[in-house]
Image 1 (tube, one colour):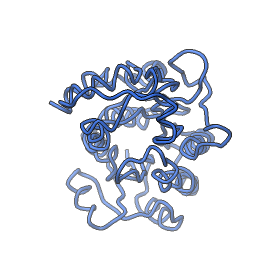
Image 2 (cartoon, helix red, strand yellow):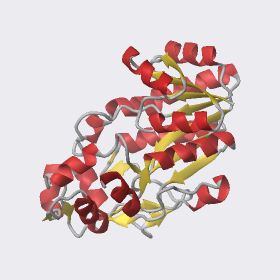
Image 3 (tube, one colour):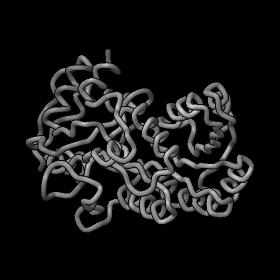
Length: 306
């Protein structure tokens, strides 16, 4: 199968391309700068330049590749983590999940490609009611107070557009692994990532290699719909954060009350730490036959920080 990987040099793309090549697929992968083309070629892909926010650039790149399938892995979450101002930190990623998604889907339709798999987000759900673990049938909270959170609104746009086009949207948990550890472990080692309140809020985790393997299966099976792609153990901040600190050789995280954290870190962080809900991967296991290499973040954190 000829697979077009939009965002081949991203954290997931760099793990996805080799897995596709190893399974015998012909891969064309994109980069945004010439300096990254050699990396894609080393991974076994035909490398092309593409600007995901430029409709003409997307159209030309896809048409030249003549793919049987397209996967959307375009993000721009580099730089220092800024959880307090996620609207700024994720600004370009939000555009890639809205405008970029629309460009890819329009080109897919124009070139007759119906097999589309896109990366969505499922680290935690802001729903403040019900059980601590949600399925694909449960609603995802878009709101932060009375305003739609731009990160969640962009993910919702992507999911609705891709599913309407007959493709699959994969809600990746909070990613960790090669290329995705520094922004997490650095603050933990500096004791800049405290437990807020009682730390009851749950998070779902996912190793980048498991994100890639789920994408391969979804492409090969021409999956349709939304799938939670997370590990087997959603966990509260009071559990996973001290464990991560220990694995990283850091001191135990500090604890601060919600009222103090809110002006310092913002509503998103307080919600994550105190009320966030995790996700169930039962559907992906059942329908895709997917099994994570790291069933628990406990194993994955140890492996990455050994």
